[in-house]
Image (cartoon, rainbow, N blue to C red; front, side):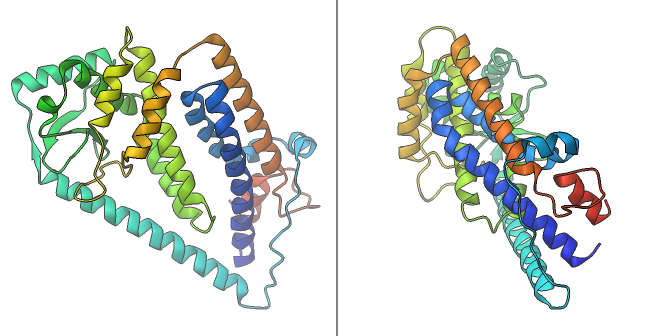
Length: 327
């Protein structure tokens, strides 16, 4: 394994992900319109395709490949490969360390402000756990530094509520807001957030990777809104809209536990979309169809990212990268 091998692998990874991200960003508006926000959130799962495309046999990937990526064409006689690798690693370490440092700082500040729930409050929260089918229930605390309810990751998930949560929200609004947060737990959104942040650190040099993370988190929140509106019996959209506006996080003077701020503009968009959230067979079929087409396109643009063109290795796509690296 040489520096040129690593540079080639990183180069191919960037190109494959650049094309896959472009597919997702172009398909999002169409998916939201014809299928709904839950399918728009599922669309981000296509980011798993580029590395997984390596597992497909070369006879398949060669027949569906749309693009043939060039290699980095770097020469081992100069110092450019080492410089490029050093710059990439420095960027990964810097972005990763800044993200970890911020998360640790926020967690420590919050843990120092934790307060336990009263017996009555515990019963109210446990009832919401049962309604949302979340077992076992997460640890639940209140915090003076928390402006809106949020789920915090760690050794065990923790549901953090503002100190005035039981006064600020009505009984029905509490159930709706807690249902929203518990959906994050049920879908393992905390895990996906960590994986996306890791991908952002690895691909820090991609121009719009930060915008992609913001769009991913936005789709995640809107998908939770969709699930709440569809899961709760009766027409409670107005109550949920009022509850959403109570979760507005000010621009300053607050801590964003999840790293996603509920700005007034974002909440305006979310409340306007409450009227179109519904589940139908037609929308599900449309969402599945568009998702399948996008996966096929992603496999196609990732399949020929092979730096060993013309080699005797029978694999293609990222399998050849792994083989070249000696993995």
